Length: 409
Image 1 (cartoon, rainbow, N blue to C red):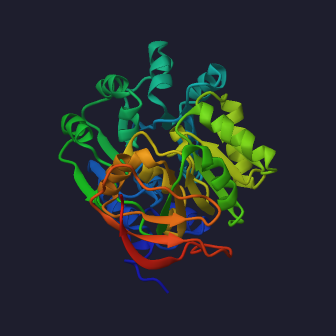
Image 2 (image 1 turned 180 degrees about the vertical axis):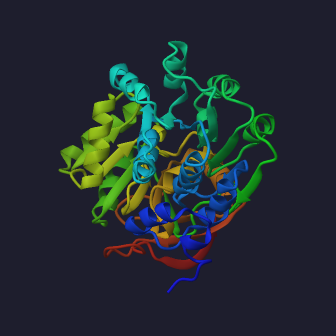
Image 3 (image 1 turned 90 degrees about the horizontal axis):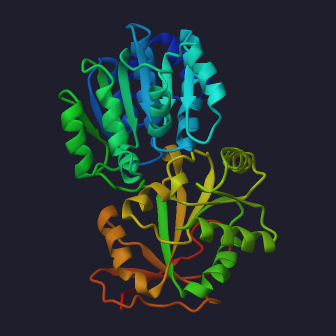
């Protein structure tokens, strides 16, 4: 039996919300939930830093809804992508009806009509991407002068996507006397500069250093020539039975990988910004249901996919931004579960790998496959590593360490 400090009962959460948490099967709060929920319920501003997959959505959903039940005004949640908006809304709709509250999702790429209808129902919570929210504001379909709580979810990603001007404009439209909560897995200096202007003595709850990957995610890397990636991919997939999320750097690359996997009789879908909202929803729903075993995505989906039980994340291409590596691999090993991530790198990407390892503060083990010629990085690297060799079998650990330490040459 868990004690009050170990479960949700000791966090000052209203009984009606605790009841919903119990129905969802959650018994023990994650570290970010344990720290952030009581502070949020008190009405204080929060800067929450924790790895991807540690339950940040629940950490701001509960305080927002509980406070909205006691005060006037509405809640606003800003997110970077359509997929993340949908994921956040899925959490809110599990709690909002118990408090007689409605939610509204405003995202680009979706028809305006249904969104206008939702706004006319006077929702207490608006979940939106910055661009579409501003579209509605320009047409005077939504007012923010009564927004009493504002959430910035994955703010670093929003800035990376160029939303800084829109965020500034939106924050100028909400009352200064409000509660602001910011949650993310990374916290670069440009975020700190922004929140220092728009937040009031925020309490920082940092579960791990910014950029740290989830501790239960094992990681390995193959260094191969670019033209052998596809062959290696098919070999790796043959050793896993579960669902696989695969990341490419470009939309064109995603399409090529999807076609190659379909040719090899894999059930696969792709998701990126060139796909329509309907196509992206079908791909994500199909991945969740098991219709598609492999989902090929660009970084636009790195923070918008909250799917339980993803066995493996494959970085078919290294990300342009090292921080996206953390968000990519965080799609596996969700909520404290174990996960595994495999990365393909080419011989000329030694400096890119160094930047990733510097961010995550650990070296990534290198593996070799007996049927695929392995390569070395072209530039000397200062760190040493354990090279692993393929031993076959199924399940995690098939690339077992041999204990031989070498230099990356």
